[in-house]
Image 1 (tube, each protein chain N blue to C red):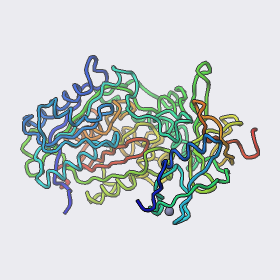
Image 2: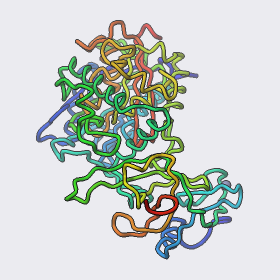
Image 3: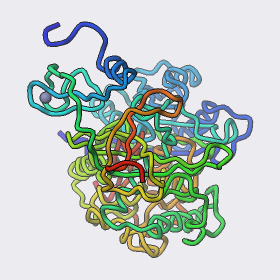
Image 4: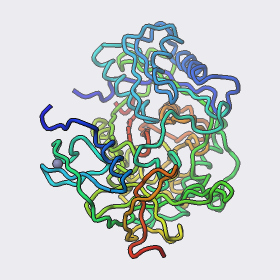
Length: 381
Length: 131
Ligand SMILES: [Zn+2]
């Protein structure tokens, strides 16, 4: 038995992206939920399973049920970081296929920008890292970038080109937070925070929320918009703390990607559009390698000189990513919403012509959790 | 429970040793694997026979970053991952060398120094002493 094509995303929406003054995280979340249900043409009362993960509310699944006035059959609150939502889709597909639920809602929201101006987290430094004061989570990614540069000769310019490409996509997205031109020299001249990472290597701090609604494939076409089918999914967890990561140049995306692509029956070369959790520029290089879009160590060359920019050889983070579009603490849900828009043909000036297969990939912790979803149009079933 | 010690757990034992100026790591009596950070069971074989041993203290920098901070807020400091000869890795700081001269592959030696809050912490010096 396979979950391939058994469930579909039938509704998707964003809310409060950028700055959502005077709104709480859960209020932004509920606005996204309202939008996704309207997009799907589904009444709130039809939702019988919910999933969320919020940084500061340990019991956010319960808060969500309460705010929606629902008594769901299943409340999923699994917390594996920003990748959680791409794991929620897999659990949703299982619940739907086993007919334990009929309509699954997955959502997120944060007001971190207007509430605090920085990453809001309930996490403290790990016991065996705290004495050395690494910036959380930035220094962990800086160590990974340093190692990749040492081991493979990845350059400062190649890291910068990830941010430049992402900004070029953001310029095509009216919803993106930062849309002014960004050149390689601008990235390299931006403030050094934790070597080798500079301010423009780092994701934004914004508000924002997103939500999707999933149903079984058999009823997925009874909605206003074309369904986006979940063709495959996989997870990989390798550690919690960066000091426990066996090889800083190889992430759990090797496992999550292979599992997802095996289930979907697709190869990387067949994917039309890619959404990667770009908390930092190094992430994109690591994930492109680990997901099989290029060989290990060649990610720097792959992204260089517009390789993943508009007109490049692979469209990556077409909304402008966490680096330039939106990053409210946990970005995973936004990879899914952008994949849905691309596969529906709703992506406006940034639309990838004829996009049928999309890959969405979430990262949690400090390269700790990796979750991959392969999504496709009806033509890919 | 068979195989599991009474008394404080491995985190507390490690901290108590460190407070006395002693840096020790665990070694599995079952499979011989060295273990850091301190654990209840061996991640290589699952056995609970973890004893304490003194590492050689010799290690190699695996990755490094320098946290950039304004001088009036204390200035820059380095954060490194060091691979010990025993095959375990730990986060630490290298003293006695300019931050920009710390690179992967640098040979270093452990000692018990101070962490950010003055607490006992394992830190490293370049092999052969401060440069
Ligand atoms: Zn063992």
